[in-house]
Length: 290
Image 1 (cartoon, one colour):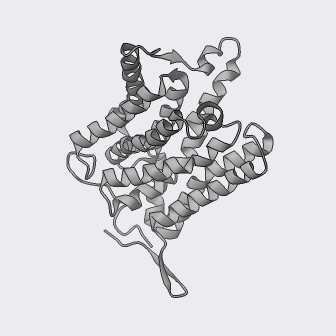
Image 2 (image 1 turned 135 degrees about the horizontal axis):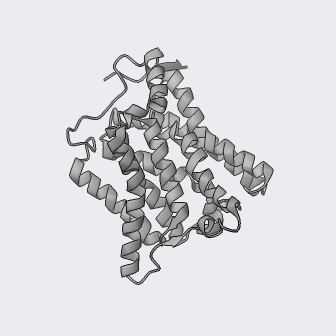
């Protein structure tokens, strides 16, 4: 295991590779754009608001690329881009798991909700209106494509590796999950966002969303650690989770509870150390840091 790169600023040695520094830059940059939208009274469905939304969404990915080039040398940088472009890292088995997992969680949650007297599974708004207005599916397509790419170049593309150098896979997942969840916080105060318009701050839905984001993180790490650290695999999983949630709707308590149960199940079966049976946590290749 190599140590993090260091630079000296004054009398303070700063670990440039630290995930905490990455989190500060990513969350700080995102919040700068989104808090500006709040201060200016902008909606995300306005042109200026959309520009600030996209700028905030891009912050983790841009920071991830920046930290990769700051911390890693030629070998580490090549490894980063290979994890985005090499489909073979995923393999047929794990590609199937990526496609089936969000659907399975949703269908099981719907069945349980129905048995408990709920509405079970219903089509999302975009699907219901698609016949008369094909553009209604665009929000689902947006959340399934652009945000996962912009976010995961940083969250799993950079931060998860750094966390797993010092923490178990489960601990790293939960740390990243908490930061990932808090990163969304300004969205609850900006009209035109899903979090503001459909969930609301301080509601039961708010707490379910906040905890549910954390619960997703171990499942993402489980896939990441079994696909040779594939960023592409995680982008696909993140996007498919988003698309499934937008098109197949289940009551929030049942939906998020089953992601929590999945995280517990994965930890029990594969173990907290690596979320793999061999306890072998994948790391960047030796000699990849500058």
